[in-house]
Image (cartoon, rainbow, N blue to C red; front, side):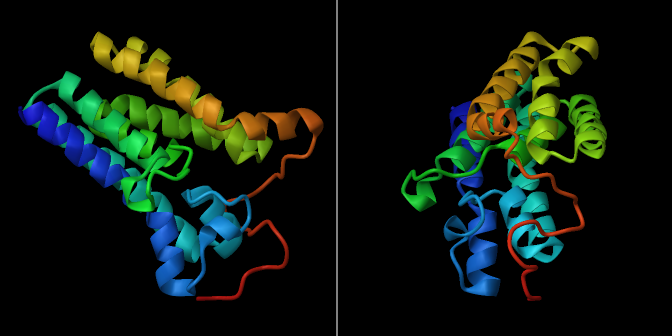
Length: 206
């Protein structure tokens, strides 16, 4: 019963679309009409810069971390995995946006692994930074980092539910980046930096 409660809580936590609401509150705009149309922190950062992108990223990470961490410490790794996966599902198909397309789960997946398996979460974050630093493609960094989750879970000796979760999360992130892969193949994917807005002219300040 407690596991079911934590899974529902995880989904509701994941459904809080921080990128959407931060833009609504501070810019009175709909992020779904800007940039790539995605509600995730990456698109918010590209369009509005770090003033909104950084809070969106941290909050998207936290909404995966909290239910996963509580699940692990209250019940066990299996419940933590289920709660973290539910948060990712909520981020992808949020109930508060009537199940319309949400984000690509990268930050939420990172948060979930920081809660379930901190060594895996921190290592994957390091992989993201290294790949991004070399390629300047956030999409490539996200795909590689997420794809490494299962490997790191096995390497650090976490139980099989965490390893399986890592593999499933990596596959999910890969599938949601299908359009990015097509643009990469065509040479149309934009490079980016953490400190620069990409599309159009720089957005005005808050």
